[in-house]
Length: 113
Image (cartoon, rainbow, N blue to C red; front, side, top):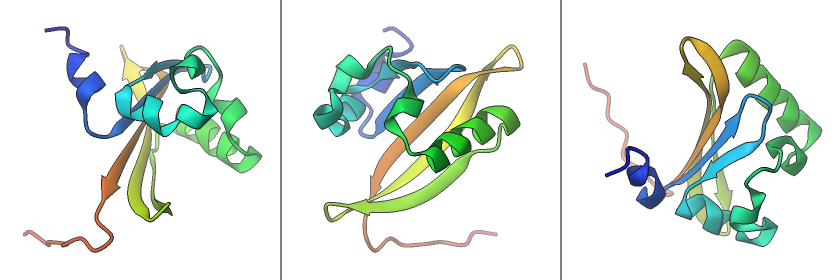
């Protein structure tokens, strides 16, 4: 098994870019999520071209500081958590990973000590 095989079938959307913002990976769920925008044909495109100026600034901050951007959205009656973070190799930022995971509208929350 190729070490990236699990990502293709992962039940959430995974989008990965290089440090310049070029989309280098979309798993099956991400390709479906962005089908109206071109799906897998987005590979090689710059993620900044798909975002508003304030989102482009957030991407810049993530890549510059290494601090993730985490939030929830609701779209078409489905709630999702979005987790965007820099990925590194050899201690250097190499790009951005975005995970988009569907979550229930009402979700249990546990505090564990």
